[in-house]
Length: 292
Image 1 (cartoon, helix red, strand yellow):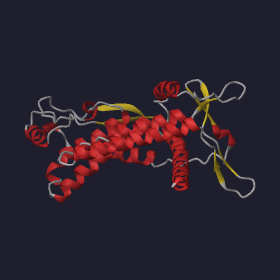
Image 2 (image 1 turned 180 degrees about the vertical axis):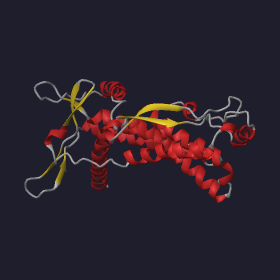
Image 3 (image 1 turned 180 degrees about the horizontal axis):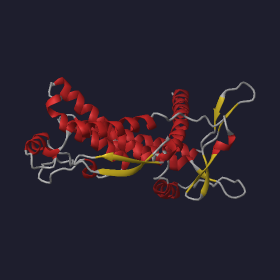
Image 4 (image 1 turned 60 degrees about the horizontal axis):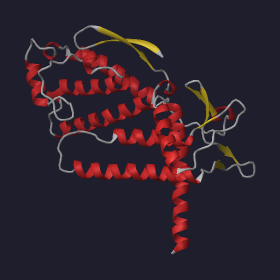
């Protein structure tokens, strides 16, 4: 981490720790960032099409500041001093018309903003968030065997094993237990169901609200909680519960436990998951074909 100081909307400076690599970013930070970033892209696209982007420049900076505040876990008012009288929608976002009315008032917080200076300050941090997130590269676990294990909250853990076959050099993924396979498919099924429901609910809505961030985070974290195993002092892996009720309870507790996992480790496990899920789908197709 490095200490960074920036000038905020009222001309004062705030200092905070900024990550230098994906291993210093929590997985939850990445998901929060991507959720807010999608909102920003949709807003920009809508106002460029309507040719109203330039006249709403101040609101654009508010949206950029929201992306930054979500990523750094700061309050939006830490970056952009907002007047308490601005109206909000049902999701807590400032309404554009009310925001612009406040902007016209030179006595308001927003009305006093030096937009050029504030934009420069925000975009420097915004660009660096992009840069550090895009530094992520999937680590193939067969390259360094030491990478099969990692420490988290004072305990040792093992990421599902990936290695190269000595025979033909093919990448091989550890087989999941039946219980793990069933739970993973159930996690995916529930996430797909929630997405479908929310897509239906959002069809006739005109706001820019993005409801999918929490689903994505829960899906990734639940899967990580299921796949990673604790390693004892003798190198033995913990046993996953076989009973379905015990498995559900185990998964709930482990999901909370891994909620502060770093982005590098979390996405490496997700990389394993993508390959595993392809194998599971192929197995399902094979089974279905053989029973018809």
